[in-house]
Length: 80
Length: 267
Image (tube, rainbow over all chains, first blue to last red):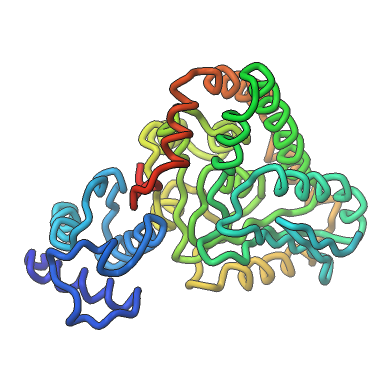
């Protein structure tokens, strides 16, 4: 199982690739809505990719109120 | 009418396949305009069926297949119209959309929904009228209506119940959560999962395969295996109208429409 840090790094890698932003511009505590400039539908698209990458099912209600990469990675980690 | 170009949907018949494109900005919300175009399709379907063996629904819009009912139009009408008249309008809309969905469901053609991105609410209900759902890996499905104090109103529950186990239907309905193609395939909703951007190509290949079969036999098989739950569909309309009459629904619609929250689609 990956460590928490590995999961955070992979989340940041995938977000940078999906929304075509430099990886080095993203930090774990960034608000991903603001940093990536995305809306809720794009966030769901990111969730779809993360679920497939990590092979987990993450109910979106667990993400209610979550807007930073670190907490998002924690939610994923809890399902691995 | 071999081709049609509407404001919300268009179609053309190619090689015996009716390809119906959904193309209403921003995400194929189903309101009055989409309904009128769908009614146009339903009215000419008996003629189109003479020269076709399959029908494919797909979306040309980037966000996905459809975000579902047009909540902004609905809220505006509810706010601008006297209560009883507004409820009568909601009933009429639902009766009309049910008629279209029932015509599509009962068509002797083999029907395919080729979906990507968001397939929410009324969009999922439209897909559920089809015989097969082919999705690319970006697809995400959801019945979010409960967060507005409603239930799916375009025939979603009876059709989902027809196709899936009741426990799965309860999970999806009562949590209002969205789910990806992996989950959709696990629960038996999906015919095929393909790579991003490949759903329409796969649907065309599937439709071409179906073109090899005798139409009368295919139609008989469909009629035998896919009964239409008319009684439950009628009940659904009554439940929806009852729920619409509650002030809580008006408040929830208003909150959704006026929301500046970055997460309005996260239940």
